[in-house]
Picture (tube, rainbow, N blue to C red):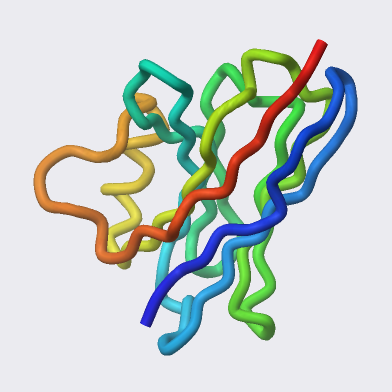
Length: 132
C-alpha cells in the first residue's frame, strides 16, 4: 500500500516535465491528492492539490499558471504537468493523499506539509532539477 511519485529529471529552464503519482494497494478515488516539494535547505511545502472528483484544484502562487494538476481515477494516478520550469523549481517532489480535503487544501494555502496529524499517505519523492 503506497504512493509512488515518478517522472522527475534534469531539464533546462523553460522546458516541461510531467510527474505522476501512482497508488498501489488501494484506490485513490476517495482521496484528495496534493503535490509538495522540498528544495535543499528548505521545508517541504504544498504546491497543488486536486479533490477526489477531480473538479476542484488549488495552487500555490509560485506555480499558478505554470503547473496543472489532474487525475485519472481509472489509472489510479494523479499528474502534475509542469511548464515553463524555472531554476527555483529545483526540488524533490512528493505526492500525498488524504481523505480530509481540508487538510491538504490548508497545506497548499499555507505552503507547508500539513498541520496536526500526518497525511494518510506520502509517496517517495522524485527529483526535479532545472538548469539555467
